[in-house]
Image 1 (cartoon, rainbow, N blue to C red):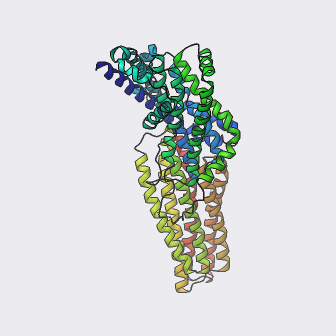
Image 2: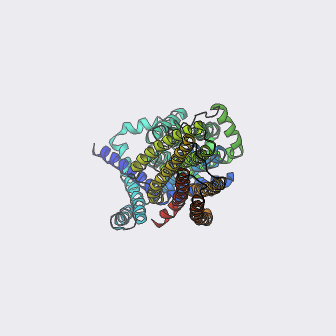
Image 3: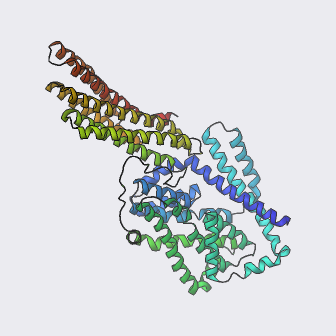
Length: 541
């Protein structure tokens, strides 16, 4: 009984270390790597290489594919661009088993100590995250040490265990076992690593391991499939491509193993120096590399097949009273929470900008239909503002990547700024209704001035939203110049208006409306500038 408890304790420590290390890596470097990930998709080979590197760093192909599914769902990445990253992620995930194959159990206590010191006494967030990574790494190898000691005694204490495991000589049974276990733990890295330990202790025959690995690869698709539930069809197709990659790979490699096992086993033993654990790790890496070389030239066919299996397009009407990228209908992931929130805020910003434009049209043509539309859209903007604020409060309580956590404060302010812009559009609609009701007139010169100022306001709002979404400061000089220009214009227009009032060219009520409208447009420009500066606040944080 003590042996079993030690084995379970070692497994628990291994799983804890694996999870803690992976999450620590994602928190420490996830946001920066994710930004690069978005850019490394134009060339298929580069995408594969970076997908492998990215996954090797964060130690989780599941996390990588969930990111990719989220990017495709948000429209940041096309389905064709996602293929290379997905293929590369499958190679990168084999780094875990390669690390486990190294005998680092002797220094595990020292690694644990260093990680604990950094985590407990580190003052900067990044130092603490690095401490989490090192602590998880040490826990992983301490768990391996405990499991290895327990497994070495299993045949003596429990002979029937060896008999059961020795009976796993059916390839289909091995594939099934690998699939089921990986679906449960949702990590092929964990399953293959445990398999490696079992094989090194003589509990599982090497040929059986080759088939179990194939099953592990299929089971590793679980996180991506779960993340694609209730997403757009393109995101579902990205998850399907991940499944097809591993299923087709299992079929091809399974057939080759069936005919070539007498040649493959000696080959693996020779390149691994007869180290059984290393044999398992190398077989895993070879499988994934072979699959990628085989299927990468067929990436276009993978995309076409995915579109045939999941046909049609999304025809979801954007009523505004729903969340497209966040909320209950979308799979939540801390690694993509800020990305998805940014897309939702961008949608809200575009809605507010279009509503401002529609409000000014209604101001000049007096269309009751347009005025009603402005009011309805403002209700939708208020709905999004409330939902986004609630969502930001929730994710602010979670363990997010360091760079994402810095951005949360800015996102709160952007939501408020966009909501205020929506209020100004509603005010303009009120002015339009007042002018129509009382049959007021704005002078031709005054109308030209309003249109000119409105045009500049729409331009600064568009540039600010682009800067907010892209995190690129290239628009900043134009935004600052437009802000100064609009401030100056507001002062000049107010002075011109006073002169017209003095000459009796404008009625008092029309004059009040003109003054309020010009002031409102200047404040919209201020809110737009705040939106742009939100990314600078993140850097200062």
